[in-house]
Amino acid sequence: MRRRTRKTLAERIDVRTKMAMLVVLIATGAIVKDYVLGSVLFAVVVLLSFAIGRGRMAASFSFAYLFLMGIFWVTTMLPPNAAGALGSFALACRTCMPICLFAAVFATTTKIGDLTAALYGMRLPKAVVVPLVIAVRFFPTLKEESSAVADAMRVRGLALSPKNLVSKPALMFESAVVPVMLRCAKIADELAAAAVARGIDRPGRKTSYNAPRFGWVDFLPLSILAACCLLLVVAKANQGIGGLL
Image (cartoon, one colour):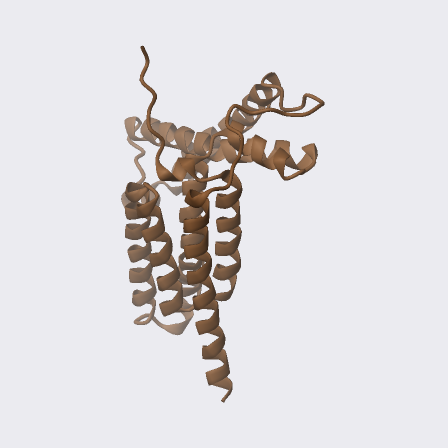
């Protein structure tokens, strides 16, 4: 008899709750952009990801965040002309890191059926539900295809390394981008066909094995995240008022 795997906390959280948390993070990230408060926001999302069972993903994003902070520190020692573009790039990536981390958690812990049921439960029209469901399923598949292309490039002696990027930039670009673009077109068609075969465009009321419910497992992380984001926004507003005074 096949044993049922136990769901992690991230998979037990209702899809609508995770969507609300993502919206809260996007709104907070648009306001909180400075060095200290932005780092605090990222730390809150990392701790939340660890708490709901996505520690490995949070650790990988943490290393990437430290790398971006290193780039930002290097820009302080460069001439202004060179530091401007590189610093802006590092700042933009650093600002998006909390949102990207939770978006990755959302995409990897949300089943398409649960997402579809939640969106239809929110009374959204089919013209919104179908593209959104296909887009959420598209990005994890694109990651797998990109890994396969990177492995094929490594076999051909075109591994992603500074030496190859400097000595053979055109060949590296062609070998990496062209296969991924061709696979993107094919993946989009396959995902759309699979969704239609499962009845996503069927008229009438939609049903689901897992009916979306809101419980304590949803209230606790959402309330904690909302409270932390509110405190960060208030701290940012106080900084602005202090600057004016």
